[in-house]
Amino acid sequence: MLTFLFYLGAVVFLPNNVLGLWPIPRNLELGTTFLKLAPTFDIKINFDDAPQDLLDAVSRTKDYLQTDKLQRLVVGRGQNDTAAIDQASDLPHLVMSLLSTTTPHSVANEATLPIKTRSEGYSLSVPSDGSPATLTANSTLGLFRGLSTFSQLWYDLAGVTYTYEAPINIINDSPAFPYRGFMLDTARHFFTVSDIKRTLDAMSWVKDVRSAHSWKNQINMFHWHVVDSQSFPLDIPGFSEVAEKGAYSLNDTYSTTDVKDIVSYAGARGIDVLVEIDTPGHTAAIAASHPEHIACSQASPWSQFAGEPPAGQLRLAAATANFTADLISSIAKTLPSTLFSTGGDEVNTNCYVQDAQTQADLSSSGRTLEQALSSFVQTTHKSLTDLGKTPVVWEEMLLENNVSLPTTAVIMVWISSQHAALVAQKNFHIVHSPSDYFYLAYTFEPFANLTKEQETLVLGGQQLLWTEQSSPENLDSIVWPRAASSAEASRDHGARTDPY
Image (cartoon, rainbow, N blue to C red):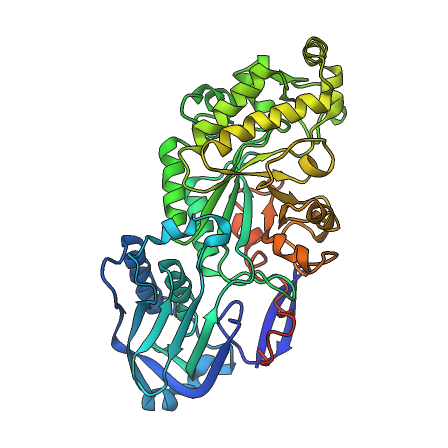
């Protein structure tokens, strides 16, 4: 049979058994016996006080098993399996159990715990003799991950849901990295709440693989690059005027209710939402409501004042730093995530050099531009750490600017994959987002150029969709399956010996 992977946009066919699992779990044992779901198949929860979002996940899984109708990728689409299916045992139910004796928490609660403390592992056993299948985990989040795997095991033939590879055993499957992300830019093009929810659904279904070490398991971080110079669609409590004047239109905004809806929807699917308010660069849209805070607004030629048009970035004076800190804290305190990004990429020095007010502020305060930038960042980050949040920044804040960052800050490496080693040398945690392997690209080695001791600093990575040339019309075709199929040909170093 053939299995396929998408590599740099090309379809590559490989001789192999076709599996609906994406990616293959770390410890997978397969048999050769046919097994079908009983007509009365059910999923049972073997503990009290199951949270509602887990109950909802069970309901969605049962619906999916009834409606997916995936057929085998073979000639005849499995028609030759008819006789074996008729003789196969029926699987009566799947029993889900928690190994922990503590009161179960919601999936959403466990998905938004501090990044290194989340428990996502599970074990799954599907016997071939018709006895119940079992799914065990230490957390409801782990059970949720296992449900996704269970749902991928089955094929359909004439309304019968079956597998030809029982017994199936998956032992202690868990992600190699705690951060497995996808970033969506909703500022260059506006995406509706339904667009975002559809993307969140896809993120929760797929299992993400990258490189020989692999991120493994469902994409669990939605990095929401919600605002930028082109538009400011986020309605922030206490700062509604920024979106009213900075969005493309009043219809192209995310209300407080919208944000709560998106975050809740994501959490119920095991996804943490990392919101980014990029500062001090990429903020030209704020000028429409607060011109007093923006330097070189609409300056021309834009290439001398910004990474892309329109020009304009936040000034660094105390009044603007306090304004920014208040704006950031107003949205951050409404979010369950422990992570929040203040951006920090592509700060344009010439913009400040040419801005008379910035130069006057620097002169009166006796500070250099770097000192003013560092003070600005410290002010905004204090507003986050006071809320118990961990700041996330693009790599320039650490590698190009002399800025003081909290030791807990997470650095997103995007300019070059080679810069990860520089970040590690400074002992900061890393999220890989390297543009030299393309945004939405594939083969990648997350530990390249790092010492063994530095490998623990790698939280994971993400693929990014900047939307200067993407919109709701091509969102799905651009993102999927490429965001999920990364480096399917590569495996864990020394961790896998099976042929799948």
